[in-house]
Image (tube, rainbow, N blue to C red; front, side, top):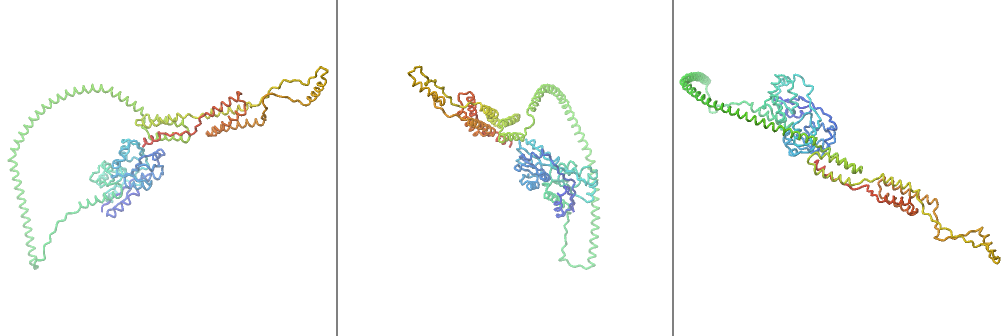
Amino acid sequence: MTHILITRPEGKGAALAQQLEQAGYQASLFPVLKITHLTPSSTELSPLLNADKIIFISQDAVSALSQLKPDINTKAQFYAVGQQTADIIYEQFGVRAAVPKRYDSEGLLALKSLEQVDGCNIVLVKGQAGRPDIAKTLKERGAFLNSCVVYKREPTEELIADWTDHWQTQNVQGIVLTSNAAVDAIFKNVAELELQWLQQCQFYVASERIAAYLQQQKVSLANIHIAAGASDTAMFACINQQGSKMSEQSKPIKAEKTNPTTSNAVPLKKNDVEAKKTTENNKQKVSKVAVLALLISLIVASGVGYEFYRKLNAGKVQNLAVNELSDQNKQLQKELQTLKSAQFNLQQALLDSEKKVAAALNESTAQNQQELKAALQKAQQQGSSLNPQEVTSLQRMAEFKLWAEKDYQGTSAVLKRLDALLSEHPGTIEVRQAIMQDIQTLDSLKPIATEAIYLQLNSVLGSVDDLVFNAVNLPEEASAIDENALSDDVSDWQQNLSNSWNKIVDSFITIRQHEGVSIEPLLTDQERHLINQRIKLNITQAQDALMSKQASIFFSALSEAKRLVGEYFKQDDDATKTALKALSKLEKEQLNFNPKVTLNSTKKVKEWAQ
């Protein structure tokens, strides 16, 4: 019964062992590695949120990452090295992953969707120091690669020093290996005799990569059998197929037996039978001796004949060999002369070529130095490679300042910073053109001078008490004519008597007459105070509307304040003129608190990042 040793980590080889035992093999579980989950930093996990493609190296990578419960872009394209890894991805994240036909690094890199990855954000979820070829190839194809290390393989601490002796005692014939780390764990610090025994075992590996690594331990390729993947089904098929071949090769070839036909034989008597057997035995003995003697005679005759023939032709052969050697010597001398002349010509050619090479080197040294200097300056100017995440972050910051903070100047400053970043890298002309259009649009939006307008309103508010009301001016009194003047003439005694009486009456009642317009009623002090308070209230309301960005209320309050000043105060007074002029100027202010602005660069940046 073939004994197969399964070295997979604990908890992963039980199903394979059961399949082997059901098929008639002896299977033993001997984990040589243990899986330890790691906790990456937030910096290592953050690329998962903006990743375009996510590659999982193994089932352990999926399990370790799912336990961390990170923020992950489930709309990204997922990849798995094997089908079992893809099944676990769907179970943990609900996403169907792409699987190559060959369950190894080469098969994964051969997928068409991973051939053109220039500028793509790719996250490689893997174990410590695992799959360097995938990372190297994707970087060479122009991808922005981030590695997320979530687990590591370590040799099992329970491995005892004489474990190979134990395997030999158990008559282990085949060993299952699914990683290079398992190869290192088995072959590390092994004595010479144990190493020789290991090299004679049959190894069942999960990929050509492990097979090549195993050959570095001086294991013959004939003893290495490559399965179609690391799954239990693939491993079992590889072991069972190889076991069937070994069984067919080990089957003994049986000679065909001829059974004599006895159906028509005549029964013999006992004495006749014994006599016949004795005669046949004697014949067999005589024939064997005769054959042996004949063979010896033939051998002796052959030896004598060969010796005679050898001596007969020895002289001829020797003469032919001497003649042939003489001809070869002459030919060699001619070739030697030819070689000497060719050597001389070669030396001359070498001298000439050395002079030409020295001149060419001296000529190209200065040119190479200049080109190197120019390349270094260009590399310094270009700086580090452009990170799409930084570009998209700046664009989102600009959108936040525009829509959330209404800070148009701040938005313009962020876009100018983004344009300066893109200017150092080629292939960003269209994006930069859209950014410059947005910057021109934002710079054309003049900011509202809120503080200046507020101070102007405050100045008008302080001058309200200095305004002069529009009071009515009384006309001058008419020149007084004393109609009751007494005459010196005695004959006018009656008139003088009447005038005297009128004077007595005037001392009690005085009636004056005025010439001009009719007199309008005047405002009381209380009414004047109320008018001033109404004007101040409207100006204060305009200030509040300005700070709360309510343009309609602002202009309505200004209009009412201007109406009251024009109606109740003197229009020819300097204070009134100043107040009306200030209010009229404020009414012409352009208070567009919410202009409609659309960033053309947003769409261009998204297209470029994809």
